[in-house]
Image 1 (cartoon, rainbow, N blue to C red):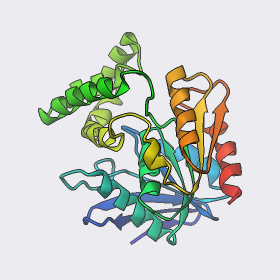
Image 2 (image 1 turned 90 degrees about the vertical axis):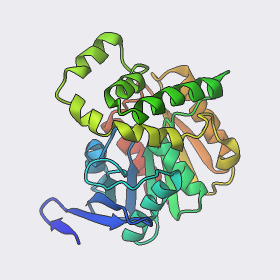
Image 3 (image 1 turned 120 degrees about the vertical axis):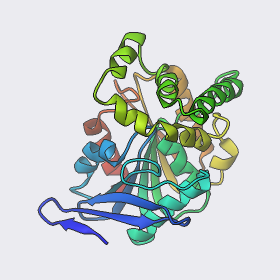
Image 4 (image 1 turned 180 degrees about the vertical axis):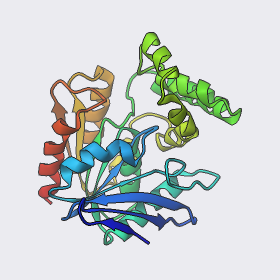
Amino acid sequence: MDEANSTLSRVRGRVVSGDGTRIAYERRGEGPPVILVSGALCTAESERPLAELLAPHFSVVTYDRRGRGGSGDTRPYTVEREIDDLAALLDEVGGRAGVHGMSSGGALALAAAGAGLSIGQLSVYEPPFSAEPGARETYAARRHRLTGLLDRGERGAALELFLADAAAPEALAGMRGSAAWPALEAVAHTLAYDQAVLGDGTVPAERLAGIHARVLVVDGGASPAWTRRAAQLVSTALPRGRHRTLTGQTHAVAPHVLAPVLDAFFADE
């Protein structure tokens, strides 16, 4: 089932999730397994720089979340099905692993830990929950607009709506004409999946209280204040949560800054 390249110490393969969906993954390095869960619009390739930095000490798995890259997709989407995808990867690496989730991938990893998956230690970077006044209403309205556009097949418009908060108008205009735009449109339908993972968009304190794994919650010192407040609240709600701020980093955290933090955390199991 797998294709190995001994020179690069890289294995490519696919696992079959509970609903029959095939999930494509890559594994690099040797050592205790660590699975990287990507955020919105990202694939296994997006996590490659971080994976390569961790691979000297860990067996690092990156994968295409369902509906992206080399992975399949089975409708209707449910968060439980994405949790099953991660469960299949855990089985593939021996039944237990450390997990790191980026942004909405962090929210998915937290949901998986809450569902009882055998996650040894968990780290998340800026899971995009909010604790700001009116957050639930704002999120519901935005989710309604986004899913409406996707239901009508307007992937480009949905993509613009999603990216509008993260990019200045002139930057967004440049992205529309870039070579990367078609690839982003190709996975834009999965934005609805990430919206589902986030629930009502607020910090799910009650669910987090049932997670007993050690969890490191990381944010960037140059990220918006609301992002950092949410990260702190996530950490506080976790029975074994720790919080760490990386000075000067934003939501687009530099892999070479994040890697040593994760290296020390996962080595400490």
